[in-house]
Length: 536
Image 1 (cartoon, rainbow, N blue to C red):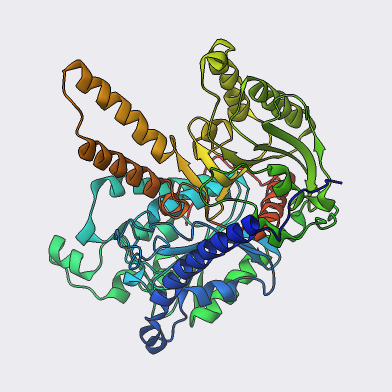
Image 2 (cartoon, rainbow, N blue to C red):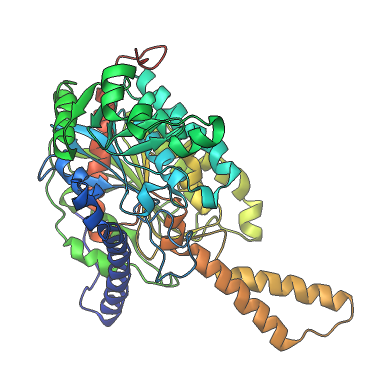
C-alpha cells in the first residue's frame, strides 16, 4: 500500500483546498445558471401541460441509478464574453444513465431556453455525445423539442456541419444500436430528420410537430395554406404518414412508453461482470488540497493516484527509470487499469518508459488512464541530442494506436506536446474530463510573452531601435492575458474540448462509471446491419 507524505493540515494544503473549493463553487453556479434560466419558462410549460426538460430526463432515468452528465459547460463565453451573463449547456442536456436497467446515452433539448434552439457549441456537443454513444455501443435516446437553428444568428458552416448529426444517427442504427426519439414539441426543417432517422418515434398528441417546412415557410415558398396539425401533427404522423410509432397523451405517458421500449430491447444483462474493489485508504476530500492553482509548485501525482485506486494499492512500473513520468498498475472499482501521470516534464527516459508501458497494457487488455499534469516534453541541448523528438514521437505513436480504451483526466497543467503525448482531445480518448483548475495551452502565458519579447527585442536591435519599456510591458501583459484566459478549464470546456469539468472528489466515481461503460461495450455484441432501420 502507498505510504503518503502529504500533510492535509499544512498551511499550503489549506490554501490549495480553499482555491479549489472556490473554483468548484463557480462551476456549480454556472451549471445552476443553465437550469434556472430554463426553469423561468415553467409558466409557459405548465400552461401547455408540459414538463420542463430536466424533469423529462429525471422521469426517464431509473431513480437512484448512476448518471454521468456530459459537456455541461458547452458554449460558456461563446454566447457572450461576460462570464456573469453567459449561459452554458449548448441548448441541451446530455449524459449517460440507466433506463429500465439499460445503460443509454440520453440527450434532451433544453426547450426552456430560446425554445430549444441550438446554442453556440451545441452542435459540437451533440456530435461529441453521439460519438461517445457509438464508441461505447449505447442506445441513443433523444427527447426532442427544438426550434432548430436560430436563423437570426445563421452561419453557413453550422448548416453544412450539421449534416453530420443525421449521418451519425444512420450509422448508429446500422451498428445495431437503437435510436429512440420522444418528440415532445416541434422539429422543423433539418430537425424533422431527427425522428425520420430514428428507429422508434413516440409523439405527444397536440404538442408534437415534425415538418420540413412549417406554415410560414410553406406560405412563403409555395403560397399553400395549412395548419401545423395537417402538416406535421402527432395524430397525422402516427395515423397517416407513419413517421411515429406511438401516440402519447402527454409528456409523462410518452416517457413511460420510452422506458417500455428500452426495457424490451433486452440488454439489461449486458453489463460486464467485475468485482468491486475496496475504497482508497486515504480520504478523497484530500484531493482538493493536492493541486496548486498556478501549477508552479511540484505535485507528487502518486498522492493523487493513491486517493483514486482500490485500497490505495499501486504497482509502479520502472520506478527508478524516467522518474518524472509515472506508470502504475492498479484497480479502480475492480477494473484493472494502467495509469500514466507526470511529476515533471517528459524526458527521453520517460517517453520510452511510457511507450513500453502502453504496449504492455495493450498486451494485457487493460484500459489506460492518463492523469495529466505536465509542462510538456523536455527541451534543451542535452534533450535534443538525446533524441527527444524521436523518442517523444514513439510515445505519440503508442498513444495513437493503442488498442485498449483510453481515458484522460486533466488534473493540472496540460502544455505543449505533453497534451498530445498524454492523450489530449486530439487523440480521441474514450472520455476526457478536467479538474476546475486545469490549464491547457501550447505553453504557459508568461513563457509565451517572454518568447515574443525576446523576438521583438532582437528585431529592434537589428534595426538599431531602443525598446520602449512601457510598450514592451504592455505587450507582455496582453499576451499573458490572452493565454491565461484561453487556458482556463471553464473556457476550454465551453469549446467542448473536454467532456466536462468535474469535482476532484468525484474522480474515482467518474472513472469507475467510464470504465464500466467501456467494459460493457466490449461485452456487448449488437446486430450490425448494412443500413439503418428504414421507416416504412
